[in-house]
Length: 318
Image (cartoon, rainbow, N blue to C red; front, side):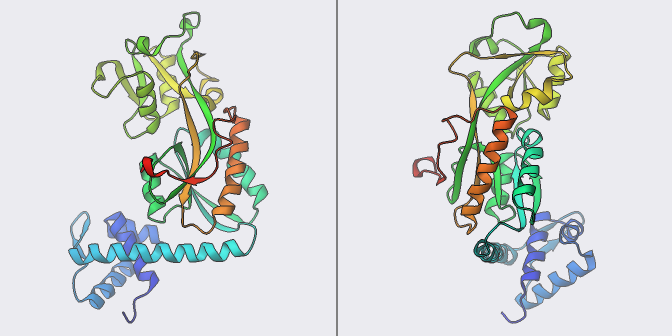
């Protein structure tokens, strides 16, 4: 199609993602009239409307839906061509878009940023904190290069690189410090404080306690691990947090921390990226750096995670 440009495809993809001309223009760092003009030019090329313009949001027309699918494929291919050029030039440099889950971000990011800036001084690190589902979606759509999440994600087309395993610990009021460590069955009878729905850590905690979402009377929600620990300190219940969060989250709150007997609840923290990414070798180097950061935060980097190789998700997990 004569006249079609990558810039127009990027603007159209942003509009489809944001569903709003103003927000899309802001995401593209251009004015709203300029974005509207580019979309009108695209519609002129196709000879049909691409979006339905509403007062508060826009919706794609059937023609727009078809264009969006192809546009994202083209933009992803261009991204990977750029990565291929970067991979051929040696040390990693330029933009790297890293996503990370909220239950790891506050404890790993300071060390990751420091270590990567020393190892790759020309790296332009762009960070996004979000729940696993959002990170995987952005990764598959080409808006992220890699993500730090809890494994497995079992997503076709993604490479999973295990970093380390870490245990979950129980945080309870300080006056309960001398009490026996409750069993998972005992936890079912206690007021359990959990993260909001959408966090994989919530699902892992429920699984350990052998509880389901159908038992809401004993469950209270918080928006972050910090909130949960503060709620415990106020006497509102008990909660589970990952080992790496203990030092930061409990240093200024009057709570007690106890560790479960074996088999302990735990999770595997890892990195994921598109299997087609030409920067796979460099991303494994980053994985080694993040693993070392995890070790310094107190996570268990023993054989449970460190010895696992980078492999695509197994077929039986897909």
